[in-house]
Length: 443
Ligand code: TYD
Ligand code: MG
Image (cartoon, rainbow, N blue to C red; front, side):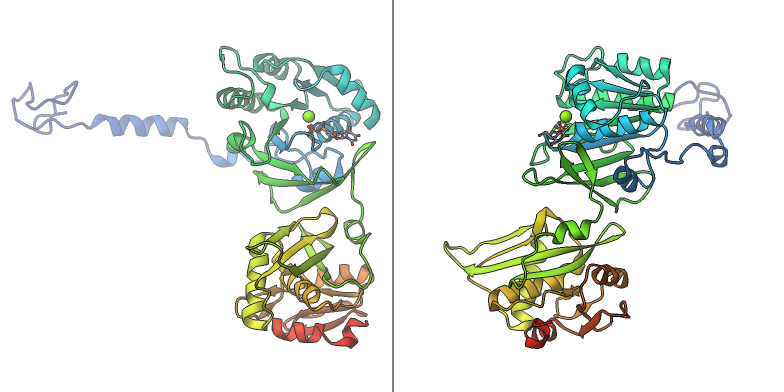
């Protein structure tokens, strides 16, 4: 528009064709048009409230615990894990359980033949006729089922077998996985169908799959564990509808996956009596306190450089505790091979394990066991001070429940259950001094 005479100009021009003024034409229309478009498309946020975000329980308790109650209708959840870890077993158990409650479930079996799936299902539980199988891998065939049958749950095993119409890339390739999953998610949202999507990851985490899809789906669960042990962990890496702190604990057996009913008992089952280098610590597994046995071994170094190996705990925590032990408590382990692990295949990054780790290292080096009914719990600061971890009182209650009667804790600890003696220490050097007390060891 010309700012001098107000005449419209179809495009910017140096001179107005109406009044012939120079440099008077300016672009103005766009803002007005776009503002009008936006206000026409807006809807009060309030009008969406009350929509179905209430999770529906799957009936597999550990899955429901991790999801904060169950699967949210119309949501897409990715379960990722290494091949052979048990993803198909877990999702089949979820499918059987949801179908048993009368809901319609479609199982898309791209990975395995329906006869194989049926044979496995027969071992896992009773089958109901609301569970149907779709032996197809084309995304459009699957999404037609969304539209026509409106199933309550669709399990797709796996995303790496999917093919999107009109895309030549091989199934499992980056472009095929991204496009297929994108179309599937869009249609799940449109038809309000709940989808459980299985995705394989390789050990180094590099794959055309879960990493690629994290931003596309609502929830990402990872299923992992040491394949040599039967223990499996279900964790949430992303969850649009709740916290990601809860951990599901399963055991794989001939009859499929079952919940670990008493995790503390499971982790302490094979604990040796009177062993040096072993300290029990109550850690938080989501909201639930669980006792685990921290084991350390400090041994003469065989090959230079010395090894520092952490299993089930972050290597960075082990290195930090070693440095504080050396600098603040005069316990140098330089030049020794050092191993630290959670016994029984457990895994945690709870900072409340620092003190137990330090004491296990000291105990192994000094070859002095702590008493069998002693636990230790506390965070270790860089100056060697001890700090109370979150929910210390609940952790101490769990220790008492499991038969422990003495706890080495930071001096700021409020209280513990009656019957559990608290050995309060302000610093790591003080804790090491108290741990070497023969009376405490005899407890
Ligand atoms: P699977 O669910 O096929 O793993 P994924 O889908 O992640 O590749 O599980 C594979 C392993 O689980 C296999 O080694 C056999 C074992 N398994 C059991 O031990 N018990 C069972 O009841 C089932 C079904 C499987
Ligand atoms: Mg599988």
